[in-house]
Length: 550
Image (cartoon, rainbow, N blue to C red; front, side):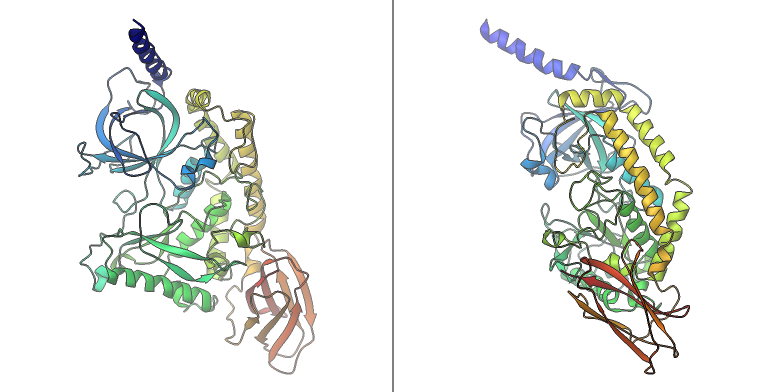
C-alpha cells in the first residue's frame, strides 16, 4: 500500500509540474531524455515534441504535438556553464540541439522549427542574468535591421521530462549554411585557384568547446601584452586542409599588417581593398549602441567568401548580448556614456584575459570609416534606431511575455537577488524594464553627441606625409610629433580624447626647416588612447593616434 502511494505521489508531482504549463501563447518545447542525463558533451538522444499552432494561437501541452522528432541535446556555452553563474538551487542552463533522423545520431536533418528556416542546429538561450529577456532579442533585431547577419529568435516555454523549465529564447546557431552564413562550400580537396579563397567563417572568442585551428594575432592593443586568438570556425577542424589554413591565416595577417602599418589617409592602403567597410561600420555602431562589454573581444565572428563572390572580409554574424545594454558591472558596462571599445585601455583593464583587437582604434583614424559611421548613424537615428520605436518594441514583447514570464519567475525567483555580472538589481520585472528603457534613451543621446562631430577625429581627404610620425608610441611620458610643414607660419597642435574633447591645444611658431617637430609631455595625462592633430592655418598636416600608458 505504501509503495502504491509513493508511485501515486510521484505521478501527481510530475503531472502538476506539466499542468502548471497547460496552455501558452508561446510555442511549447517538450524534451524527453528517455532516462538519460543531459551533459556538456556529448549530445544525448532525446525525443522532442513541439506544440506550435502558429502566431496568435494558444498551445496546449495536453494536445497532440505539431511535430515530434529525434534530437541530440547537450548543455552549451562557456561562462554560462560555470557554477558561479547560478544561484544555489536556481540553475537554468542553456542547451544546444541537433535534429536527428533517428536515435543513433549518425545523421542530422534540416527541420523547420517555430516558423524559422529549416536547419539542424539550434540554441536554447536561458537568459539567466537578463531578467527582462530582451537584450539578446533586441540586439539581434537592431543588428539585422542594420544589415548584419544575425540569428532569428523566438520565445518558447520549455519542459524537460515533464518538469517545467521556464521561458527560453530559441535561436539559430551560427554556422555555415544557406539560411545562416551563406558562404561557399569549401572541401578539403579544394586547395588551388578561386576555390581556395573561400568560404571561411572565423571568430575571436574563448578556445573552449569544439576544437578549431587558430593562431595568435601579431598585434595587441591598449596596455596589455595579450593578443587576440583568431579561430577558424568553418571549415571545421578535421576538414580544414593545411593549404586552406595557410591561405586564410596569410589573408588575415596581411589585413592586420596593412591596417596596423599603412597610412589610413592613403586610399591605396592594402587593407581597404580587403574588407567590406559597411559591415565593419555596422558592427562598430551596433556594439557601441548596446555597449556590449564583451563586444569586439569575444563572440566576434567574421567571414570571407570566394574572390569570385566578392571575397572581402565581412563582420558578422552577431552574437551574445545578454550583458549588454548596461547589464554589466565591469568595464564601465553600466554607464550610458563612454566608448565600449576603449573600456579596457586602463591599468585595471590591462589585466583582463581578453583584449579588444587594435582594429577599431585604427579604423577611427580612417576618414572613410569615420565619415561612413557618422552618416550611417544619422540615417539610422531617423528611421528604426529611435528610443520611441525601441521602447514600443520592448512594450509589445513584454506584453506577449506577461503570463509566460510570470510562470518563469515562480520557477526561478531571481528578482532582488544579485546575479553575476549585474550592475542594477531590480526588485521586479516592471522596474527592470523601466531601467533598461531609460538606459537606452541615455545611450542613444550620448552617441548622438559623439557621432555628430566624428569628423574632428580624422584627416578628412588630406594626404598624410610619409614622414609624419608619432614616437615613442605607446609612451609613458614624452611624445614627439613630427610632420612636414607646407609654408612658414605658426603650427597648431591639438590632442583629443576619444569623447572628442580637446585636452591639449597649443600654437607653436613657424620653423624654417620644412620638418616640424615638437615634443609634448603627457606624464600627467590619464592612460588611454588620444588623437593628435597638427594644423597650419585651415589645413590639416597630420593626424594620428597615440597611446598613453601609466
